[in-house]
Amino acid sequence: LVAACAVDAHSFVFPVAYGVLETESEKSWTWFLHNLRRTIAHPNGLVIHTDACKGLEVAVDNVFPGVEHRECMRHLPANFMKKFKGKVYTDNLWPASLTCSVKKHNYHLRQLYMNPKVKEYLKTHHSKLWARSQFSELSKVDYVHNNLAESFNSTIRKLK
View 1: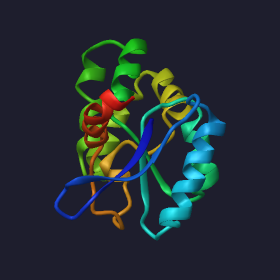
View 2 (view 1 turned 135 degrees about the horizontal axis):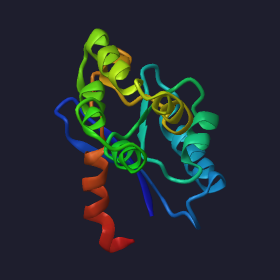
View 3 (view 1 turned 30 degrees about the horizontal axis):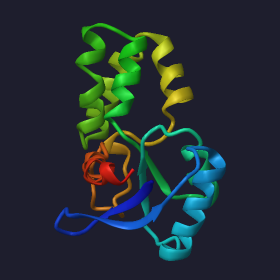
């Protein structure tokens, strides 16, 4: 059971679409997202915020080309910290994500990029938007994580 949720002007989350997938694959996600697109179209300023489900990133890019696709900062640090350990990483990854200032964001990235492997890792494994300073101003939602969707998922977990 999967769901697409939206956030209203009062920061309330509400479901827009549900689907039952055989498996989390590019094919299944593409089917779900095609049906979602039939429902909501492709409005200007649309933001899709996902975690790292198998096949989801490619499906979003195929079904909603040009959409602002954000990656959840709840999952990125967990994966990042498996590869890179140390104070420089813990002191700079979250601040790079949370700041609205491009200058501060770039400062934190420079600290992270002191290890050249970090830049390559982020480019290869986390190429979607994950920092507020990079978000479009068309969307008024500045969440760097999808905790609202996670809360919704925990509510429907019994149904799964």
